[in-house]
Every structure is written in structure tokens, then in C-alpha cells.
Length: 406
Image (cartoon, rainbow, N blue to C red):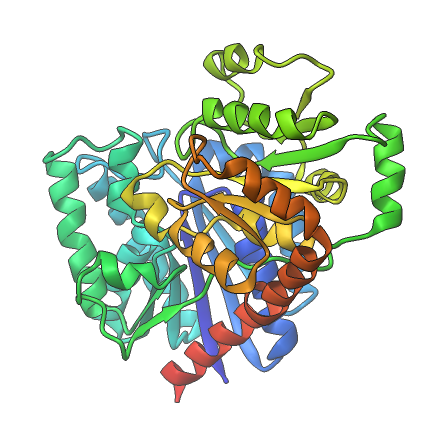
């Protein structure tokens, strides 16, 4: 079918989202289409290269067993962010472009599938120099995410630079991929229908699944056998408010006395700790877990919270946790501001949509969810099978590759 390079830059390939959305996706692509020659290229900060060298060796063995080549290159990168400042961009490009030219030439790649903006910028240079096809897999709206996290300042040279580069990437890429249809609205006609594709964040059903027996065993282990468990999994702070979670939990507890809040996160700072002190240990627990343990914990939940602040980033985003919740058999309570996910929840009836923590109908919606849990669970499985499964998303990538190669 052809030779493909999948390119990532300044991201830790071994962990979290990268592990689930890149590594497992490439494995499934190779298993589905064995004749496809895949090279995963990852540029990483030099200290991460050294720190995770053993993981790199393990991943190389794991991928090579399937016939996937893995090349990781350490670079000097003088920032703690994946958002590249103007002053840092020349140093980044002078290290990455020559190496990518060599790799692309010797692998005879026909396609560079670039994840996010920095990798796609490198890919654009290689396209101009060697004539390969470029996939701009956006994943998110890089500039606006940088502004929201105060990495880029409004109207700064950094913002202007990346706005211009964003336009160049959209115009020159052969295919542009977004995680939701809302990208079309955000870019106001700049995305050509013929080259824009939607591939949502996928879920691996061999890792995230519903098992009543396993759930019962784990509940006994945690002494939560007779509790109504409400789970939140993911980052806290930037994309939502911990106060919103607590407010909604208190309203649910008023109608479900045995409610228990289970938070699975790696972002516990002093402000979040202070907020959580509003609840006692008999009402909630916080865990910092590896991905395998997260999957096990999701199976014990009765309800999941997927809450987002009202901003442009959340309007186009697609949370990885959504598919993980549904595949684990957990109906969701989602805020309207998680635009695409809220649309799917309504369409498939796999949870309930609320305005925010102040929704006047929240109690009635929660009662509806509790009453129809089995129906919502089955509908969630249907959504996963039809749209969010790893295999479904793999098939979409393969159709894109075929379009470009032939």
C-alpha cells in the first residue's frame, strides 16, 4: 500500500493520550493492513530521551514485533511547554528538518502523518522539499489552547506567527484531520470539504470494558459495595472547575444519599486540595493511577462527569475520556459546553446534557439517568461500536491513506 511516517514532536510518546491515541492506533493500523510500511518518528526533549530510555527500548521491541519501525531523536528544547515561542522556533526547526529529510528519503515515505502543529510544520518543509503527501492531524486548536493556558499572550508575536503558520498548514496540507465536525465552524470555510476529515479520539475496548463481576470485586476491595459511585477522570483546572464538580456532586447527593465521588487525576495542586476539603473521606476519594488502573476503576462507576468550561477550545475538542466512560458501561453527565460530545449524548441517548452546575433541571435529569441506566449503558456501547472504537478510527485513517496513495 505504501510507506508512511507518523511524526510527533515534543510529546512524551509513552504516556496517557499518546499511548492510547498514537501507539495503539498504529498497532491496529498495521494489524489491519500488514502491507503498509509504518515508521514512527518522535522528536523529544533530550532529558526525556535519557530519563525514559528504557521505555524507549521496550517500545521499540514492542513495535518491531509488529513490523513498525520506531525512531526517537533527542533535541535541545528550552521550554517546558509544547507550545513553541517565536524565539525558540528556529532552534527547533534547524534540529528537526535535516533529520526528517534523511529519514523520509531513506524510508521512501509517500505520506507524512503529522500530529499537532509543530510536527505538521516540520512535515510541511519536507513536503515542499521532497514532494511527499502531508496529513495535518490537528488534534486541537493549538493557538487558542496556548492562549487559554497563558503560554501565548493575546496579540503577541507568538500568536500572530502561529495564526499565520496555521493558515499555511491548512492551505498546503493534502489532508486536514479534526476530532470533531466543529472544526469546520471554527475555521469559517478555510477547511475544504474535499480534504477535511473527522477522526474522533478512539477507545480500546480490550482495555476499557464493562464487567459486572470485576466491578463487584473491586467495590468490595474499596469498601464501596453499597455506594452510588460518581466518577471524574482527567485533568483538573484548565478545562473545567473543581468547584463545578463539587457543586454538582452535592446536588446529586441531595437526591442520592449514598453517592460517592471518585476522582482519578494527576493534577492535584494546593487550590484543588483546598476545594476538595469541602467533602469528607466518607464522601469522596482521589487517586493518581496509571492507565491500566484507571480502566479498572471506571468499571465500578455508576455515573461519570464530563464537565467543561464555556470557551472556544472546548467547543471543538473531543475528550478521550468520553469513549472510555461509555466502553466501561458508565452513562455520562455532560455540560452543553462540551459541544460535540453533548451532541452525541443527545443523539445516542447515552447520558444527560446539562447547562452547568446551576442547571435548574439537574435533579430531574439525574433521576432520569438513574432510572434508565441500563438503556443508556447499551446505547453507549452502540456509540462506541459505531463511531469511537479503535477499529472504527483505524479504518478512517486507512481510507485517508488510500486516498492519498492512490
